[in-house]
Image (cartoon, rainbow, N blue to C red; front, side, top):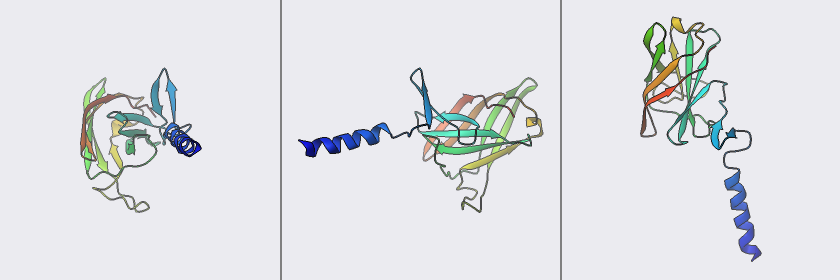
Amino acid sequence: MNNRIIPFLAGLAIALMACGPGSHDHEAGHHAHAAPHGGTLVELGDHEFHLEFVFSAGGDRLTAYVLDGHAERFIRVPIESFEVEVTLPEGARTLTFEAVANDATGETVGNTSQFEARADWLDGTEGFDAVLKEITIQGKSYRDLRFRPGGI
C-alpha cells in the first residue's frame, strides 16, 4: 500500500505547486500573475501566453515582452513586428512594435521575445485603451484583444 501512496502524494504535491508560490494571486477565483517588469500583463488564450507592456522611464517608448502562461519565462517568436491600435482623446493611433535584438541573450530580429514601439505622443500618457490587432505565438494566432496599459 505504501508503495502506491508515496508516488501519488509526490505527484499531488508537484501538481499543487505547478504555478509556484507568489507568482500569482487568486482573487474571487481569478488566476492572475505578477508582471515581471512591473508592466501590464495581457493574457493570450486560456492561460497559454502573456504579453507584458512596460512604459519606458523616458516616456516615448513602450516595450512588450512575450511570456509563457505563468509570466515567468520569455518566449521567442519568429516575427518582426505586431501592431496595437490605441484610442486617445484626439483619436485613434497605431503603435507598431518592432522586434529587438539582444546580444546578451542571443535574441535576434525574427527570434526574440522583446518588442518596442516608439512615439512622441507616448510621453506623459497616463494610459489608454488599446487593441492588440494580431500576434502569432507557436502557431496560434490571437486577435483583437482589448487591454489598458498603465501610465508612466
